[in-house]
Length: 442
Ligand code: PMP
Image (tube, rainbow, N blue to C red):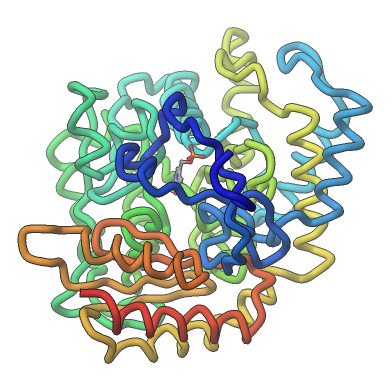
């Protein structure tokens, strides 16, 4: 161990950390050792207010007794059951609860262990769907620039984040990208959905004209793009994407790994925007981030195409050893119950304008070039330091952590997405501290 009272281990070398500058981190490690509701406790004994719900996932806050007890009980009762050709009650119960919570068209849930796997699963279901319906020429997939769809090969192929793609070879073939929807010249400092950019959806018509609709399987987008810096869909954009995909028989997939489970004030963003895709991917908030689990929600049209299709298609040749794992399912059930009992989605909707006002009050702080918000999510974009992009926002993250708040940065953007149990005093603390941070950084 390190110094007195500091529980950080001495040897940090063996753990190769994901999405982390390992050398930099290990010189000055930041570690959490416990958590309760809105706060983490660090290894050196400080309290840190969670402004990001972990990694956009602990929507009910931390260490909620109902979820902890459900996990303990399930682990002692049935630790594991084979996921293929066998079942256990909780996986079925959770699927029922999940589709009850989702908007009406979604009638079936296919389990995965993460958001990345949910994306791969949805893309594969889309391809297989067309094939079982006799439209096997539909193999092309369309993503969007700046889209984040996890880190597996399908996800980085349809995704549009350069650093996540460039080291990893030629990726999937037959993939096109829509333009991203970030238009700072006309949409900066927008509250909610920006006014401009609906026409960017028409790029899909161009792609269809280029390749032929009969070659295109699916379009995947985040209804509100999170990891790329919190980009709201322009007004009318998702509606237009839906209309064009429908017109051409192309499936529309919403990646709701971040927007699912109340972040925007309703169960899913599809409901918030009133636009129904054919599939929704989700994870994170499904189990409050406590146990890895994701899912693909599908309409009965998708599901029935397999069940009523050729005999060989009734079994989907896809799945994971841990699909619907009993402990994850128990955590999921307790999580959904917590959301419902505590009215957390309504709570997020009710706090959205207080949150938005607090966030936008930082508009006049140094370095700020844009602020955007919706539901309980928000972003502050900073002017990059010439020749050192990302550095300014990262120093804001470090200073914020020192001062006792957790935010997240992506590029030169500070992103925030607190647990939905947040109180107004926490919101004041979060933005009050950020004001100090922005005034102090270079
Ligand atoms: N899709 C979206 C929209 C995400 O935000 C994320 C994670 N941030 C993923 C997929 C990947 O999820 P995971 O990290 O659980 O694989």
